[in-house]
Every structure is written in structure tokens, then in C-alpha cells.
View (cartoon, helix red, strand yellow):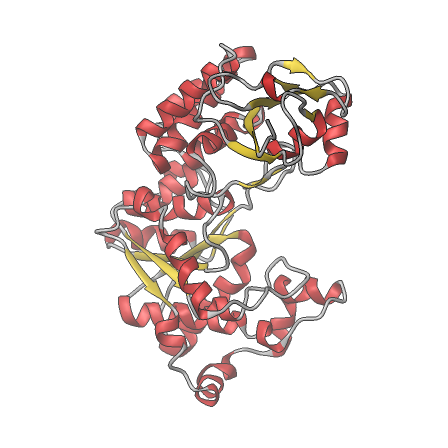
Length: 421
């Protein structure tokens, strides 16, 4: 159905901006959202110190929920992290200690303060209730509502078994725990909407059905498509690693560059999903052709970076990129890495291969050699002709004391240390 057919601001916006993949009852959700204030939630397991861009579409769902006048609930998976979500994995997740889980929770919460009004949002931890269940009580109260036959049909289980990869009984219980989360949130806060990515559809369905079976409550599920680039790359992953949301793991400049490097075919879609730019302005930007599409990419990078890191960080990142690319000036705002040159004497330097690897613009020596052969790697604005090309320490940029390394639209600085004079 067209977005204009929906009565509620929430569903209208989610459909119009391209968030809808599947929903349990989109018409019922629309009617409920049009007449009352809902609370909706998304769960985040605490498996790393930061979320990355692959999770950003989920946070944006909570942002849209709040912008439409409803209450977002951020569910921290303090208990489910101890089990590990098997969805989309061939192997079990590593077991984390309570101390690491607590540390990860602090890091994961950081971007929510920028993307949501936390005075109106709510943060809860499923360890508050799941840790209180006795094993036999849990099985007696909820195990009877799930059949092995049905559980084996869900992708998170079926794909693992089809590939003849082991799945522990611990992981097999994950979907029960997530379903009980929905039941607990509905009982405690009246929560009637769970949101998530398409890979969470089976888990969400379990929660919706458990609420109906146990408490006869009508609740809803809504999923987004899994976000990939036009070329098929997974969102949030790049050649040099994950695009983390926390500034101490990925600088605002690197975050800005990620969005600036968006493929042409993705610009309009990403503007709708990841910014608050009005749709009429997005229509103008995505209609740009030729070199002008870069204006749309800069608008995307500025809006996405400002939303997470603030206006000043976005402006500074744009200025840094302009100085580095258009004026050839290396600045201290660029990502900077150290190259240990112990045993190296002044002014003798290091090879292009050593410098390229230190720059973290290439993941391996083989990839560095390929890029050099393609003529794609530059050091101090000079095209590298061979992996063994030597760049003397004296050739460091005077203003930064580092080599400027460029691969395509990405730039970083490499600072030699421990040089023998």
C-alpha cells in the first residue's frame, strides 16, 4: 500500500522512507498508532564496545517512533548476551564475562544520547527479569508454547543445521528468551510493538504469538530490509573494518568519509533512511547527475555525521576532506597511525608496502600490492610504482610529521616513530 493510505504519522513515515519489509498486521498497527501513544522496542545484545553502522537503521526506527510522538524503549540484552543470538551465524558466539558485558553496555548506549531524546525514551535490561527465572519454572511456564517442529523451521536454526554446523542447546533457547522479553515488556510497560531487522522476523513472531497465547494481548511486529549497498556489500563493513558509531573507535572524519563514499545508486535511499532531510529535498538531491551527485553525497555525509557527532564535527570533517583532496593539505584531523621504525636510521625510510599497511587503508600485503599495481595508491601525493619504493623519513609532511597515504577517496596519515638519528 502507498504511504498516503495510512492514517498514523508513524506508519506513514516508515513506509514513505523505505523502512518496511514485513509486519505482522500493518493495518492494525496503523489504527493503533493513530489513536494512542505506543511504546515500541528494539533489543541490542552487548557483544561489542560499540554498535556499528549496520545497527543504525534500527536506531533510526526508534528515532522515527519518537518523532511520531510514541515512546522508544532501548532493550539492553544483558541476559541474552550470555546466550548469544545464533541468527546468521555458523558458529557460536564467544562467552563473555559479566564485566565485559557491563563495559560493552556503557559503550553501546553512547550513540542513543545523540539520536534519541533520552528524557522521553527508556532503557531497560532483560537481565532484570530473565535472571530471576528458575530453570524449571521457565520451562513449565513458557516451554509448552513452543514446539520443536516449529523451532526447527526458523532460519536461525535451519541454516545452521543445513550447513551441518553444530548448534548448542544454549543457543537453541535464545528464541524463547527473546519471546519472553516481549511478554515482560508488554506486562510491565504496555509495549505493543517490536521492531528489528529482517533477520529477526522469526524471533519477533515468537514474541507476538507468546503475548497472544499467554495473556491474550494483541501486539505487533515490524521489520526493515537488511541494508546492503547497490554492489551487495554488507552495511557497516568496509575494507578497513567496521564503521563504529562511537567516536573513540571511528573518528567523526572517518564516519563522514564512509557516507561521502556512498555508491551513486544508494544516495537517495540512504538519505531517506539515515537522515531527517525532508523528502522533497531528497528528491532534488537524488535527481542530480554526473559530478553533481557528489553534492548529494556531501549532504548525506554532513547530515548523518551531524546527527551522531554534532554540527561542528560534520563541518570540520567536510573542511578536512576539502583540504586533503582539493588542496592537497594533510591536517591533524585525518586518521593517524604510527609506524614503528626501530633500527631505521635517519634519513633512510620505509618501503611503500610498510607505509601502506600501517595506514590501515589496506587489510593485507597482497591487497596493498594489488592497489599499487593498479596505480591506486599515493604517498605524499606521489603515485607509488612498486611495493619496494622507499620514502625517506625526511619526506614526512612538515606540518604533520607523517606520510599522507591516499587510496581512492580515503586518506590517512602514518607517523614514523623510534627512528635512530
